[in-house]
Image (cartoon, rainbow, N blue to C red):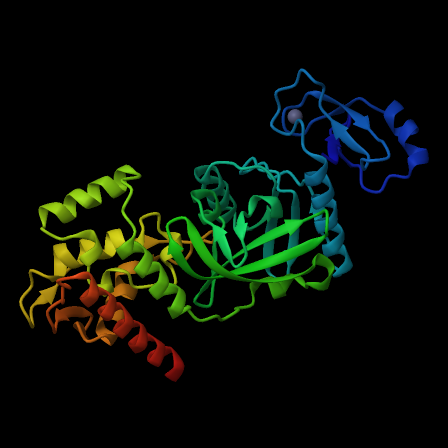
Length: 375
Ligand SMILES: [Zn+2]
């Protein structure tokens, strides 16, 4: 870390301290960790920027911060200075007991920038994001590039990654950063291909070629219907592994309703933009919604289904997946919307065999493609 308290309790920042002053500074100690209040020492070397370090016996969460994390922090700090802003390195926020890597004010907004180099639990990311938000601060997470796995444009998806998703316009985004190559990537999510795979498009440049507000521009990108039909084909023709408890319960649910998993209607797989924010795969919740709340309703009858709320890192806009799903069903002619209520218009066609199912998928794909073209 780059900051510590001196004997008077003032914060000392080791940013760009000339080599010649380090020895002098070392003698002016002791210095204390702002977080755990233990004595820390000053370390400098050829490979490292001069920094404060805990002693080996310490159990402070700031101990053992990696070189990569330190370098990343400094680059982000310098990047903001270059834009004429006044960032603070490791600024301690006592009200919420957080010390973001870099805190910066831009117009009327305050951003806490966190460069996340290690895998932490999704609930921890959510907790910290929530804390920042309650303090009126916008959390801005950059994930270390090596934590983004998979072969671009398909990347591996996990609860960890889900906790870093931002919604701008009607697209989901996340950021990755590599201090090694100094490049920032803005990933825009096209769609989820399965619960573990996303189709993305990224915009990568040197960090210093971005201006802060550019990070929040909407990058519109359509859903790939060809990838969608391929992933449904895969689902229908590949033997199902039982996998998680969620999947087991789902197969049991289908079994009790006399439905074969590979003969689900195409509209149980609808690609929705905000699906990646939800931890239940599309096929599971869409099938459940249709079978539980729609198929039993007679034509013209009202459909009432509880909402499925999801939210992004900014958390301020709760989105209801059911609403987006039903809007698609309205477009496809299965239900209609009148004065804020949903009514059934058409029976849901369950395919009788795999040929019928695949034909249904193709037809749906054509319908959705046509709509995307005309919009
Ligand atoms: Zn400490």
